[in-house]
Length: 244
Figure 1 (cartoon, rainbow, N blue to C red):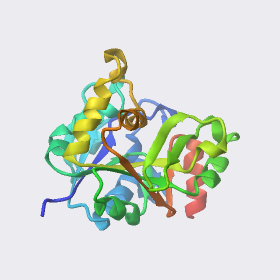
Figure 2 (tube, one colour):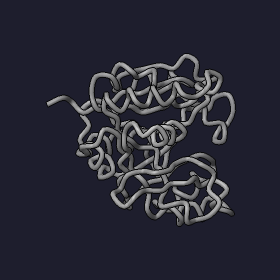
Figure 3 (spheres, one colour):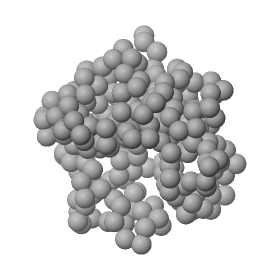
């Protein structure tokens, strides 16, 4: 049995949380007494992951001592998450990998669902998303993106501007799983964008292109456990309050 691997994408600066020249990478933010990175490592490990890698960029020196396999995006200042993910291609080409954004926290059950999935490409989504978005935004539709599934639990749309709540069956959490087959399809979908845009893509844009191309189906697993995304100081205050 091949080892289960996970990759944490931690290359970005996180300017909305920035506190100046000495700002730490977002995954080192402390939430209710524990760093986000430690929460992720614990959930990934309990969820069935054997080996964890991290893609660094901004503030890489702060992460050099962590017990994680290092990848590095040297172009982190002018690229986005998709480019960071490609820096870990060696793992993605070799075996199934969980991918986690670095500014989120979640329970091990979300990870276990993905580890046990038989689909080539799978994501988790928050079914109770509206409560969190209403607490974070005056108008949830200003930030929430479209997310629709068919009756079999496969994604039919993700990541577009939503104009009504009916277009949102849940919210993508920043946690997904690739196999080498779906990773190849991901790269193929990415290459269908203009060269100029390829370094500025969000993962959801590429997932939506995969749906359009119809090359591989994306399984969407509902999740109703504890999770959150920390983008701003207000987010941090909100979740500190909720978890205390």
